[in-house]
Image 1 (cartoon, rainbow, N blue to C red):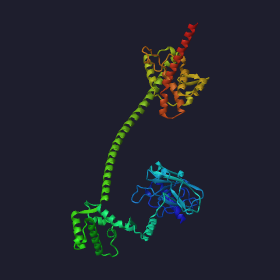
Image 2 (cartoon, rainbow, N blue to C red):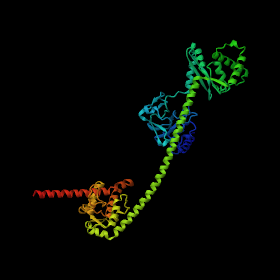
Image 3 (cartoon, one colour):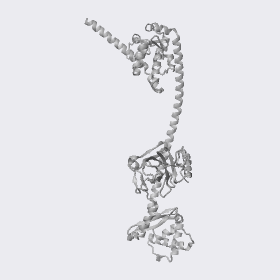
Image 4 (tube, rainbow, N blue to C red):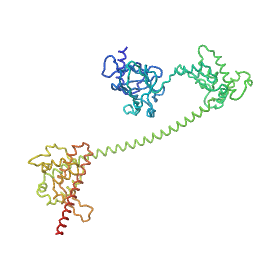
Length: 557
């Protein structure tokens, strides 16, 4: 038997990988949960779950780890949307074994477990229900379980021979209720009356009346006075459905007892006549002497009912149903309006996403084209004689109009991304010099000092001084365009584009070692021109201050 249970446990573990609580068919019965890779007989510590008892509820158990289990509870009967109650037992535990139980398919969004409530627990040696400490209970929404609400609680088993039982709160079974009602009925109390209202799946549905003996008649009269007539509902349908319209003993037996075991049709007819006569006396105040016989009263009442095609129901029930119907109609209208609004929003979002996708693809194509054009332009400029002249005397040559226009366009381009080149090919050490590319050499000691510089701004400014020098920078501008702050400002020659590209490549290599985010790299590279402009302004400002100091010194002498 243990082997069969182990095979059943492993089979359920394999089928449980679906991850859905739709496959829950019934309560677990002596269910042994084994690890996935375990084969053999169950040992101490392999928990055995059981919920096949009255008020029990546990549909499935999944083994997560040695210390954690996912529990799936079954929904309410004929209402799969509600999953709240759980009640199960655990046995075959080890002493000091610690576990975490996750009830993963709760349906309530708000629960008292958030406010300090805790599940109940008892064992065979301690039969009194106790609450688990609230600090070990957690209630939250879990995205791994269809975003259902999960209640997790930790527990430590302290006795191996005990069987532990866990429940949502104090269980109160149907059997316990019936025993309690039987004890009350045996006491024959005048103010307590127990009647059979009907049967539900072979179980009693009791009608309890608790009042003083002299108030029973007044209670029945007050109920009958609150009844009204509703059209399009015949008496025959009510009798077939077992509708209760009176609290009298004859009417209850008439509407809810089944005519079986050879009961004669005449007995049912006689009881029906008595029930109809009693109802007519209470409603209209008529006495039994006004009719010649009960049979005549029954025939007249039946004919009147067939002509009107009406039925008698309590007014309170009718008003409650009417209010409920109106509320449902109003809610349905709101839901339809919300659905229409959501549909329009989704259509708009779909259009925007389509347009955004087209723009992104077009931007990528333009960016690739821009990069290729910049590479070609740099290659052409780097191979011409202008670079050699720039090396000899960069501060004494004015660029030609076409070349200056090309320089301006290149300097204004801030979306240039240097192509990745191996480090050994880019930075060559020779005779105490470092080759940065395009025939640009810098001092090796200064280059190593530059690598430990903190911040992109300081790094770019120091690199610009190493490449151009302060004498060249103070007489140049980044773009070659005159400033708009001064009306009579004269434009200065722009900086060489291929040297600007070297600055960007060096900064790119520095940033690429810190991050791989293209957005961040592009944002930091776009500030190269700003940093060089700030350095040129600082050099000019320091030159002006030096001139002022010399003039002041000369005047003082």
